[in-house]
Image (cartoon, rainbow, N blue to C red; front, side, top):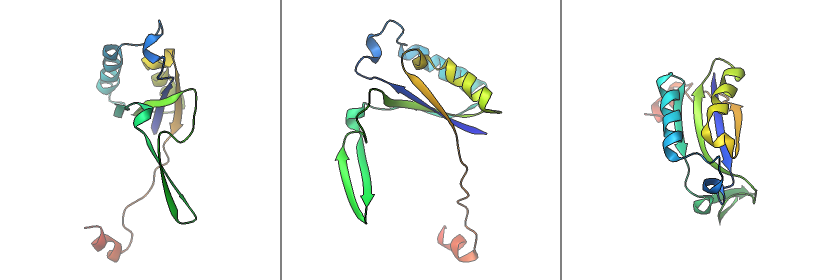
Length: 126
């Protein structure tokens, strides 16, 4: 089953704490998960200040610079992993170096069937 491990941290202090991981430690961990065959994807995100939030309300689009909400911790990156169950996903998450100075939210991925179901939809997808 796929699990998304969302890595949150306070980016204003992330690299100043004694337990803050170095990039090389994060890369080494990602390489170990990759080698285990559990990694589907992993990426670090640019600063929250580069975010743009899109909202659609009553048919009108609103685009705002910055994150959706002011929070103490911001989304810093993610690991998309294939784990046998939640317990295995949690073990993977606890090894993420940034968990020492932030938090990792683990959520199962809800699979969506996006394959065309009718001949007309199949033709349109080509």
